[in-house]
Image (cartoon, rainbow over all chains, first blue to last red; front, side, top):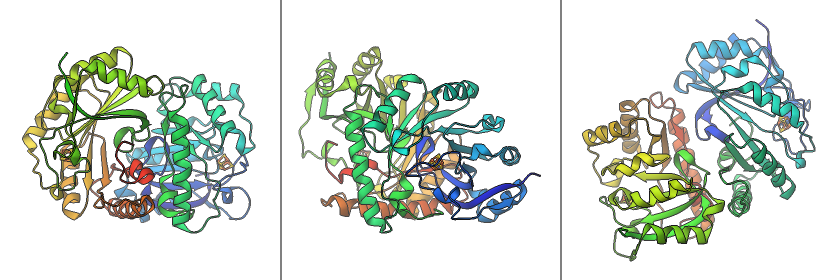
Amino acid sequence: MAKIPVLEIFGPTIQGEGMVIGQKTMFVRTSGCDYSCAWCDSAFTWDGSQKPTLLTPKAIIEELDRLGLSRTGHVTLSGGNPLLHKALGELVTLLKKRDISLAVETQATFWQDWLLEIDDITLSPKPPSSGMTTDFDKLDSFIDKLGSANYSLKIVIFDEADYAFAKQLYVRYPNVPFYIQPGNAETEQSDERAASAYLLERYEWLIERATNCDTMIHARVLPQLHTLVWGNRQGV
Amino acid sequence: MAKIPVLEIFGPTIQGEGMVIGQKTMFVRTSGCDYSCAWCDSAFTWDGSQKPTLLTPKAIIEELDRLGLSRTGHVTLSGGNPLLHKALGELVTLLKKRDISLAVETQATFWQDWLLEIDDITLSPKPPSSGMTTDFDKLDSFIDKLGSANYSLKIVIFDEADYAFAKQLYVRYPNVPFYIQPGNAETEQSDERAASAYLLERYEWLIERATNCDTMIHARVLPQLHTLVWGNRQGV
Ligand code: SF4
Ligand code: SF4
């Protein structure tokens, strides 16, 4: 079995954002990302500050079992960009055999065929504030390949330029379920209540912006629940 | 046109809870309820403290238009129990003709045929802490009638007895998308930040409870976002 560089395995907890917000899930966080977003909230997956462990899919499942996979039934593959790892395909196959549902989030820059076995796919192209540039032709063909898979778009928004980027995507992919989420500019805030007060304020701003918008009619506006509850802690 | 007793029409805002959490929506709140839950957060719809206005469906749509229906595309029919009102059927038909999506929440005690035209139906049987009793046979036949409609169950949970009630429903309806939500025992708290701190604590408790539960494997655990953002204010 090929090994996968893993940074964290944790849960059971809930999915804090996006299309299956609130879902009981466990997380497998792989290391490595082809992006380096200015505000990345999991920079430890790619900036060298934390070392991954190389694990076989079987070893990952053993750890998930030990933590409580049987009472969860859902696993989220996260990163970094989990799509960098072809070897996750074996893990996906093994988990699907056990009737576990799977979610993935990716910026949609690299393709892997195992994606088509995933139950909930979140595509999160990065807005201008990230410092990254989206290749729309690549994104088009990524979305084409997804065919009838269950996927959504989720855009993090810090400011008006990000909002304009989100509108552009909303118009380009009119039939894709669409989520927007306020960006967290205070990932260093260690006081939980201060973090949640700040995030609720940003969330209120984005609701106000979106409800006054006549382009994104059917968008869903959601906060990051895990950050509201646990602040900026890792592993929850 | 038959008239409908309306207590509030407001929006655009977001749906704060349940299956379409975060969705841009407008609210039409009807008066009257066949229940009187101990902790009802909209008791003003049935306790006589506020007077409804009798409005035709056309007048309701005029008000929705004035407020911003065109930039929302989604209306939530709320109560009280909106299923008490046969006349809402005309409103539903008119809104569907304009391609507006519709959501309803009800405790599932009264049936109306217009329910089958609703896009997102939330059934919220009330747990023991409400003081109400669920007639499971009636609920069975209500759910039977829904057929292939898009519906979910949502249970408010204050304590262990409520949790046991939720588990019972989860097991009885294994194929229905299932949402649980912490109850708000402090609906009189007028300080917004104190209200959100309290609600986040209750939410954390329910996550903890649910992630340690091996019955409700696929439940989704969600807070009331509008109360987190705006506290216990009416009309948001
Ligand atoms: S794509 Fe995601 S993981 Fe990669 S740098 Fe950006 S925010 Fe971080
Ligand atoms: S069913 Fe809903 S509106 Fe009616 S009393 Fe209970 S909580 Fe209030």
